[in-house]
Image 1 (cartoon, helix red, strand yellow):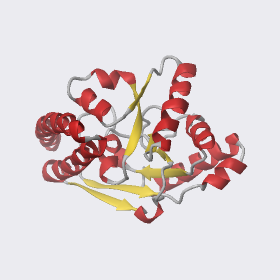
Image 2: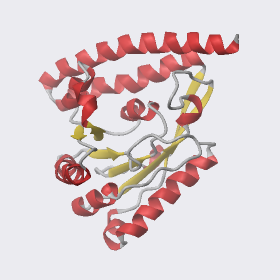
Image 3: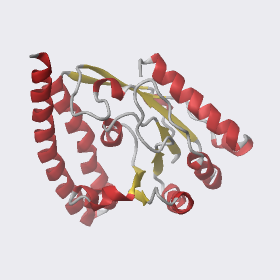
Length: 242
């Protein structure tokens, strides 16, 4: 019976969220006429509405920690990729940024068009060399325009308690652009795990960790920085049960 109720909750959530996503996507596209900042203000609704629906239908609360660590200037944000939640929720937490996303997402009607309007950077993951080139070139353009760049260094979602292979793109971009790196950890996979539509009541905690300054990024070796980011993020995730 409990499992049946979980499926009902999940279906109610997805049904309502899909409709809201379509409406928000259209509003984002229309708002782009007035500039990307206007689109971004509307785009924040994805995170805010999604979190509200998670609480309403699934009994999931959201807690944000460490906002004081968010730099005033643009930076490269390295985020744990454990769920679908963080992709939509981050606009409600961070200042305007550009996601690094797989190109396939841009083909989704309305949703993909809205991502394009928001300035998302689409990469072809099947071609790692070309993908890295796109990250460096387009990511640097975004940073120079005053927007941060969000990268999921593992590249794909991992299960709770697991760590994927952290790729060096986040380090290369930060070094080339001369900016800080902001690690972000969370435990969203506990409530919104990958591979199932089911949601589990509880609290999703997103923790913004202390940034690695631009000076440190410039001074330290690429391998040392990558290891440091992985340790910071994974340690924080484990502390939150994720």
